[in-house]
Length: 338
Image (cartoon, rainbow, N blue to C red):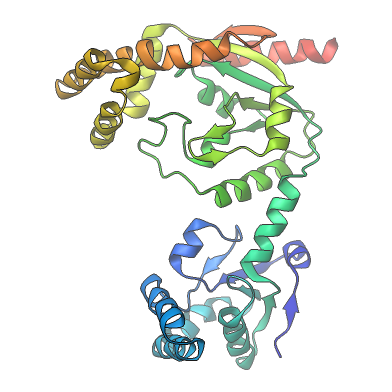
């Protein structure tokens, strides 16, 4: 019988190495944040085992899994030996055969190893329970504004800050995934919980104004409510500077095919004439003209309507990021005095 440990106790222990025995695909979707992926089965092998389980029997599926793993066991043990002197906690999807097998194997080599009770599934429940009931006490200072007014640049220079788009790896619009690898909802929530824990003692937190969703990812209701009740600052910037910033951020050469693809789908919003003008400008590498059309006839119409319904406590120009940062700090100090 292997030794087990529950999620809460495991996360409190210092110096732990978590070994995730799930497939690389499962690991990529989400995992214990400090975990190392040491899969028993490859993505393809797990698919084969799953098919046998459904079409033949559980017994035959287990036999096939053992056959796959036995061939790679020497290499597996060699990889695991890197953590021989560490305290190891092994987990799989729900604390079943994969993690039990590895825990038992490493115990036989005298490793200090335990199995995570309930596996990743229990860890995921722990993250959601904490995140969706998080006791937010800080005041949120919400930076709002049109696209490419420098809100993300400001967040990077303001502290303490919560960069939701950075955690999501998505900028929150139809073009928001261009050049990025958007995260899953599970990984987003995982990273968000860690960041909120890092900010738990803050009196106030800077954050960018967002819709309830960032791309396909949903902001937890408790955070969304706190952001909506926060103090809002309107960030403005010269139109030409916004266009320049958009070109620098979005229109790298490797991103152009994706930009064209998204633009094709926008014709009902920006009109056929504007769509053709944008695509022509992209072909001619006149990227400034392309983004000016998109800013004027898509982004500003879309977000301008939302901004008109918000009551702002201040408006700050971000033509100079450094000056804007200083002005925001002065504004926050005035809030503290009032």
